[in-house]
Structure formats: C-alpha cells, structure tokens
Image 1 (tube, rainbow, N blue to C red):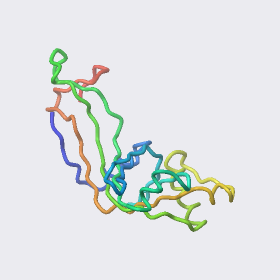
Image 2: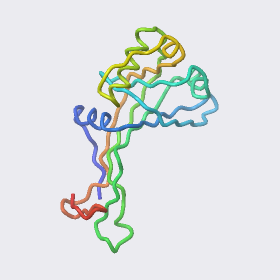
Image 3: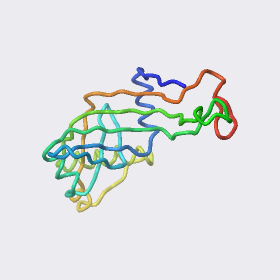
Image 4: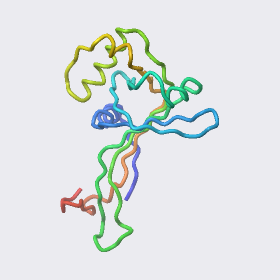
Length: 167
C-alpha cells in the first residue's frame, strides 16, 4: 500500500472542509509540545479557531505564535489479504498546515470569524450576545505552508474495507 501526495488545491480544501475537527500543535519556550483538538472554520486559506481568552495554549502562543494544524479524514480499516496481519492498515487522507496565529480583538472581526466557524458545522450565520463575543479569543491562522497525503492506498482492486467493499 502506498502514500501519495495530493497536489490539487481544490482537493486539499475539500479534505479540510470534510473534517469536523483539527489538531493544533504548538511548542512552549522550552520546546515542549502541546496539541489540542479544536473546532475550526476555513475560508480563503485562513483557518479560524476560538477558545477561552486565557489558558495554557494562549500563554504558549503569546510567546511562540507558530502552529502546526493537522486535519485527517475518517480513517477506515483496510487490508489486502484478510489472513495476513501485516497487510492491515488505515486508509485516510491528511492535511498538515503551518502558520502563525494572530489573535483577533476587533468585535466585528470576531463575529465574522465565529460565523465562518459556525457555517462549517451548520451552514448558517448566527447572532451573538455582546458578552459572548467579548469573552471569546479568536485565532486567525494564515496558511504559510501546506501539504496533503493520501495514505493506505493499495493496488487497485486489491483492497478490502471492513464492510467487504472494494477500493
């Protein structure tokens, strides 16, 4: 089974949009990694995230704003030969993005970012109370570097999914 690089921007964006969660990695000033699963929104090569105004991740990012954000489509167990343990693996697609976080403080920009996030999950805009908007921290990450992979891809017609269907 092989791993392939995904080059087409439209396909990469489709992979991001198909995910319901991303994993945000950062490192503190001692180089200790910290990774969080987060909800997100994506628009025009910018990833929007939100959190509480304070916390461990905010403290880290105030010192080092560099992030790595990973997306992974729902993995599926696949195999080439049901009787050979080493032929089993996961079939999935992933996108890895690098960028620097900028925290948005402007009220209208926060509302815009919250709606981008909510449209990812609900396909609609919302209204927000002023205290809710004031008390949220918006993370805006312009993608500086991106790569995508398709992994667990077998030779055509050699792969079986757990449900018995073929690739």
